[in-house]
Image: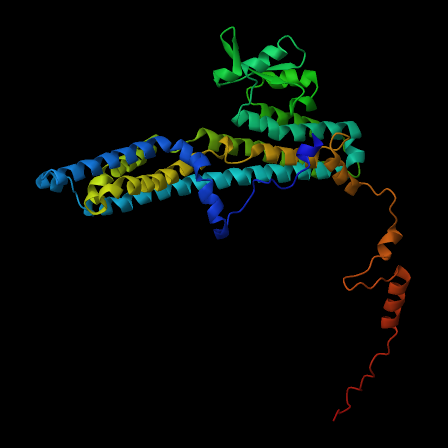
Length: 407
């Protein structure tokens, strides 16, 4: 588990430049966008090829008048192209804004979890070791529970059969219907089966898991339990109401992030706009062959197919990033990053490396005096004090009397 989580860069995070044009063109057959839009692109290409063949047959058989009537000219499509472009650009921009907002929300979750962990580590003596471990486990489980809330991941039927009647099974009562292939139906209610040995369920004890499984909003339940743990910390001279309110403020931030994710996930682009944009693009694409067949001839099919691939590709990209939590954002990597920076213990070596910042074992204050400055000059504390005394003992310039005239 530590080898999978202790990563800071994903090999898929590649920024393509202009020099990668050959690789991008060779990988085009494996494009997921092309796989999704292959149906409309294939039909439009076939239809355009049929129109071009019909046009040529009319010319070869002497039916010039019929061939002439098939040509609409480029003017109608040129006038409509700007409107189609505006529809696609507006949809893509709005979808990208949602993608950016989703990424910023998860960045805020990551930063907030780090801040809470830092405060509990600094005030470990006041918080208590056991309570600090409970808070860390709740923080580490929070992103995974939130991911399951907006992107349920249940065991399939084969996995359910293997774990049937096993103590490792946890049944979650989902508040809404989910995919049947990942659920089992009992007593008319839809249930989601998960493995207790997997994250995040392995971080929590069974009594807590039973309460969490029956909750309709599990990430909110985790934030509520976090608030309870924080409010039970006793006051003393070092930990006052100011520190408690600061921790509760961070917990409220996590609760707000739940609402942000739910708003993005549950609010889609208006249906009327999406339908109108798709219908307009389809009509424009299917009538495009009649506007270019007189000039392109038998090349109408391939050219219109490429145009359809470009236009429908832009539309599909907007549809993909409209809900960034369904694959555009790698939520598992973000959850692993939070787990790595929050959990301290034997199971997480990366967390132990961060924990060393809050421990001063085998360190002495004199060790800092032997560290050189930016220019590589190493001075001890004694030498620094002697230099300061020398500066103070420098003779001050003789002051002239007030009535003296300086020439």
